[in-house]
Image (cartoon, rainbow, N blue to C red):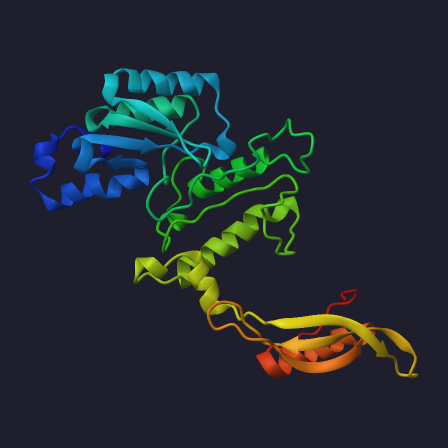
Length: 296
């Protein structure tokens, strides 16, 4: 993935601009290497975005980045981003091969940090010292980076997604999160991400870039089943009072909001599961599967 940067770095910007393929190299293709040409504001200068899983950086890495931007004077600066990452500005193309070598020496990479790639894996900013953490997120963000970039060597399998893809590992209970009730063991983090990325890569839309994010693929492939329950008293098969629920289907919020329709009233709680299973098959086209031994 880095092949050719040494030769490109030897060509003056004015010469690069004379040919469309080399102009596209610095304005588009170098983004896969984490280099963003600031043509409108600083023609000939680049912003370089790194990969810094969980935002963990060492003093050696920070000193090296400082040494890089120092040579550019007031044109050079560094950003700490909202995705726990470093961005350095003012970079000039002739120095890029030397910078890449220096990054490698201090354990950093800029590979696949731009364009339609997986962005920097983020985690708990207090990982390892948070008294309320359930999981230390650092090992998982590190594994994600190693998987995504093939140990900083470049991973062509996930270097051309329909659009960028963000990953975050949360290590504590958070009031701002939206619970999905989808939990996996720690050992399955990478296999799950791999499966999701393969689905996104192979099935995602590559047309209108306003509709190529992962959410549009989910919207296309997944049917949302809106079933509502309202607690009530019911009667069991012997006519005795018991806890139950009224079942509602449909309903919508927003500009065309409307109430759901009553499907069945007074259903004992113990009868809800088979009734909901029937609803999924009859109303939403679900296909029953045989349960494995010991599965409920």
